[in-house]
Image (tube, rainbow, N blue to C red; front, side):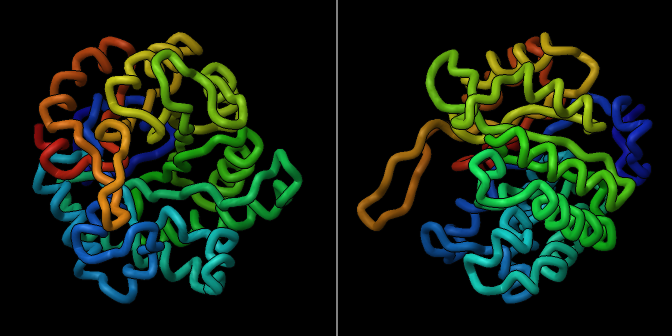
Length: 292
């Protein structure tokens, strides 16, 4: 299947997509536009939509074939910490609409769902509550015009599976799951002890359309992870979004990442050879990294 963002993605045809370039970080780009370190910027979807649009548009202009949405924290469980759980649907729907506007028929829009902030494994939240929160976001993503959904930065296998079940039941969009593994050479476990084979097997069993890894380490560390995901089955396309190195903190409390754009361009071929199908950037990466 050729790259054609005008073509509707389905759970049946998703596996026929060619290798594609995804976008880079959103949070660090928001800081460039005035956000404070650690600020939750999902509310910018309604407060400063043009700023959000500019981030999405910058990645399209850089050549990204997939852009995400500014909805990482927009599930109602995560929003309880900010006192606005009732805004989950609207923030998610609006975030999808903004990215759809930026895509201009040049890129697919994958709706971003992050961790809820509570551990199912530790009994802090039930699987049913996670499913309901994810389902609400999935419905909003579909209404807002997303082409697919990526449940990202996951560490807890039970939460990831519950989120996937909620999304898959609530809409007909393809759904993928991306895990975050501990940094360090050859480290292949999440902080909750999940390895790529376990992640892959769960994703395939639940009906996900793709699986992979994001965040946690510099992009060069993801060649090893891509190979582990590929060896786990080879049926599901592998999603990879690595950081621009590891962070350092500036005197004003802002994180900065030192990996140059050339590092990304140099690791694309090794990632593809290892089995990666979708490649992009995470924390610290910017449009220059994607354009490279």
